[in-house]
Image (cartoon, rainbow, N blue to C red):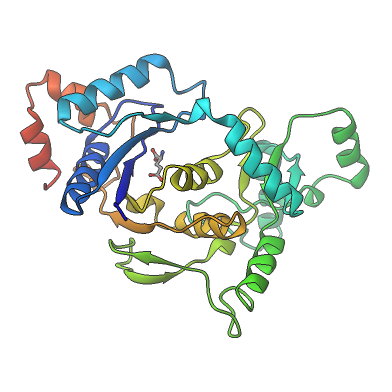
Length: 302
Ligand code: GLU
C-alpha cells in the first residue's frame, strides 16, 4: 500500500514558520516512505478564508518548494460529503440541536463557578458544553426550535461512547473493554508516543456543524482523510488531543484510522506558539526581508 500524507492548512491567515515545518516534514516523510503528499485546503470558514489568502498560501508553498500531488481538495467544494456523514451520525441518534450562544455558555459557566465549583474545560481550554437545559427552560428551547433560531449541531458524547464501547466489546477506556487508541509515531506535548489511549470524553459534546458553517473541523478532517486514502497524518502537537475525537468519529463512521505523527511546535522568543497574527514569522514577510527557503528550513530545524 502506498503511503499517503497530507498537509492541510486553513487559509484564514498567512502561513508562518509553523506551517513551513509541517509542510516540509510531510514532504520529507512521504519521500522517505516512497509515498505521496497531498495538499488539502481547509476552508470551511468561507468568510475568513478569502480567495486572496488561498492564493497567498499557494504562492508561499510554491516558493518554499512544497510539491503536492494534485488535485488539491478544497473543503468548501465538498459540503455535501460532510452533510452525508452528519446524516449518518444523525441516523444513529447521536446528534442534537444546541441553542446556547457563546455568551449564554459563558453565563452558565459564570453562575456555576460563582457557586464554588470549577466548570470543566476541554483540552483547548474552552468550557465543555453545559447543555441547553442548564440555562433555558423546556418552553424556551421549544420556542427557539419553533422560531427556527440558528443553532449548532453537537455530538452526544455519552451516547457515542456507549455505542462505540459496545462495538468494541465493552466500555471505552473502562476495565472491561478494549480502549479506543491510536498509533503515534511522533510525540504528544507530554512526550506520549506509541499506542495512545484516546479520551474523547475530555471534549464533551463537540460541535459537528455550526450556525453559519454546515460542518466542523473534526467532522470534515476525519471524512477527508478517509476519502483521500490518507495513511499518515503529520501535524502539530496542538492537535494531539483532538485526535481522540477523530478516532471516535472514525469508529462511528466506519472509517480507517491513519497513523498519527504530531510534531513539535515552533515557538517565538517568549516561548509562545506562533499564530497567524504573528506577522513577523509569516513566510511572505520573511521572504520580503530576504530570507531564502534554505533559511526557513534551517530555522525550522530541518
Ligand atoms: N486545518 C488545520 C489547521 O490549520 C489542520 C488540520 C489537520 O492537520 O488535521 O490547523
